[in-house]
View 1 (cartoon, helix red, strand yellow):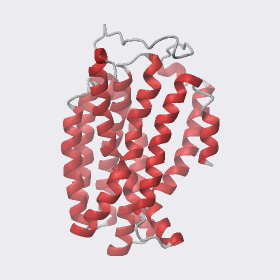
View 2: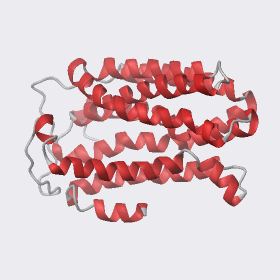
View 3: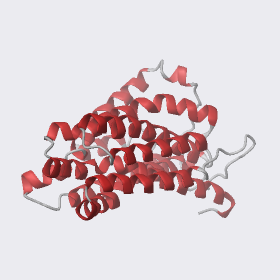
View 4: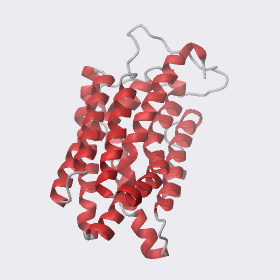
Length: 294
């Protein structure tokens, strides 16, 4: 860590902290298993809150990204934390699937979209281009890493306090923590110049900066978007049902442990590809990581 960019690393840590809480979405399979076994929901119905939340989360990022540019990361992340926490808490006061789609799916999904959109752009602005890949990987790893602790914690809370109280407890924790972390976020001043890495140790391909409207007119954007769509779809299908899959196919009652293993390697992959993005460029790491996914 460079002492002269301590503020950048502090903000990166706060952004990581926010994502470590927003990643509760990816521990949904633990909730789903309990909703089926304890409340008698069928598997499809128990998947609706997650499905809607993931869709709203993705759609909201289009607008949240623009809001982050206009109002700054602090206010956007703050609003996201309030909505995400409120959605979780409200989910603890209902047993109706439709209402939970609204509370966890819509309200929580909007909160995740707002919070997630504010973290990475803010953090990478504090670093030279040679470090942006690693910093981005660290920040987004929080979402993948979150179920490592949230899945067993959720399983413990459900067993000890019940499903409804678990929503409320986790909602209060997420609300308070994200609000605190969001107050740390800020963009650098206009005259800020990040320190550069040793040119001899890092090889970075120079690139031009383009306006978003120009990017949308390129075929590369749609090609990458389609790759991400297919990759994310496959991953989310597994994540939403991991605990149930472990119980059905392997007879593993502690299915949350499979969620933990998947999440740990999910987070590791995000950091590793960010590191290799620096030394190998953007294109080369895509092939091996795509093969690993298969």
